[in-house]
Image (tube, rainbow, N blue to C red; front, top):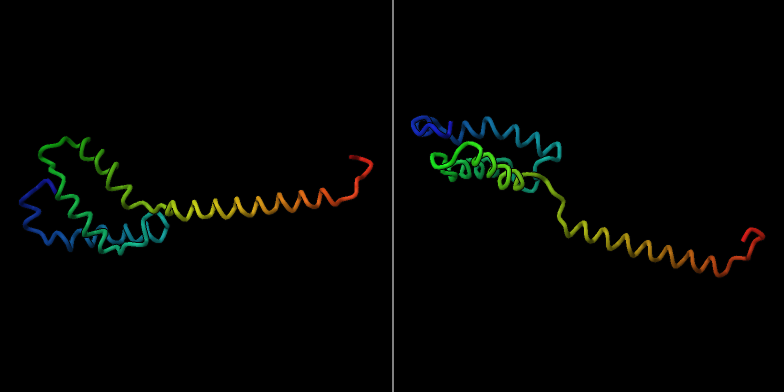
Length: 116
């Protein structure tokens, strides 16, 4: 559809794109597969602008698909922030360190048994 310049200029493209893409984006958001921090309407606008920014007449279909996979898909896929993950790892390391210290103290104060 986007390759046909006459079709693009003759249709209310934004409304049509919104009608088709918005339910898909919202379903992806509900499933946790698409970012929830951006409104579906804004994603639709961005996708439409992105589609028009790729000069399709100058690239073969595989090149266009590759660029969409490389750049558009990662922008939409929900990925937890790295900072939150690093914070979680840091807190887990602190708790494990504390637990190991406590086990060491218990070992030092425990009475020896016959088994060792």
